[in-house]
Length: 205
Image 1: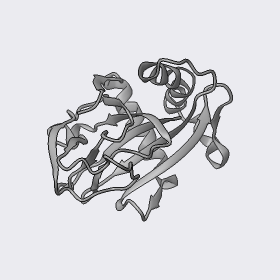
Image 2 (image 1 turned 90 degrees about the vertical axis):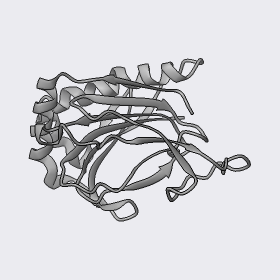
Image 3 (image 1 turned 135 degrees about the vertical axis):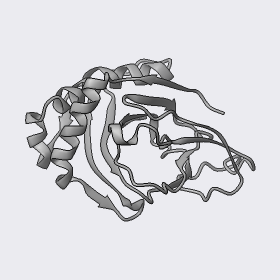
Image 4 (image 1 turned 180 degrees about the horizontal axis):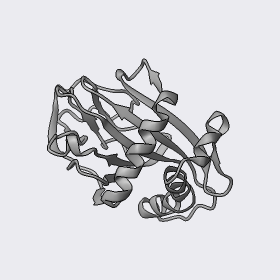
């Protein structure tokens, strides 16, 4: 129902090393009560010119290969993602990087992402214990066109949404898409024990 691309962003070896990095820094992740008690995350803001604003997370500069991956997002992926979905080039591209860790019972209703966001990328780090689990986000079609007159930035219940597909879940599995009034995606309640780790990347308008 909206433009998106699926691909493998990381090698299996890099996937495994990044999982080790996530487990090392997990104590620095924080909960967001507005989302779910089953999600913890760490947020980083920045732009492609000035780089990442590490602030209290400056120790991440010493964590490899995570730091190198973050720098790649900052310098190169930000530009590629913006240019992919926009025809007019932009010199300064601002973004948010989220390091995310979900467990059993995590869920988020269909939503489009905030209209201040231009495009979104989600890339999964999958431990071998979770290889056969279906934990990728779902893409939805809105059956009642609720954003016809006003684009609301909110999470909806799953009623009146048709599941179009679920993104494959494997090491490095990645999706990116242009944020728009119909870019609905979400996660049905996770019913099994898991370590659902991801790097989520948002380019702002």
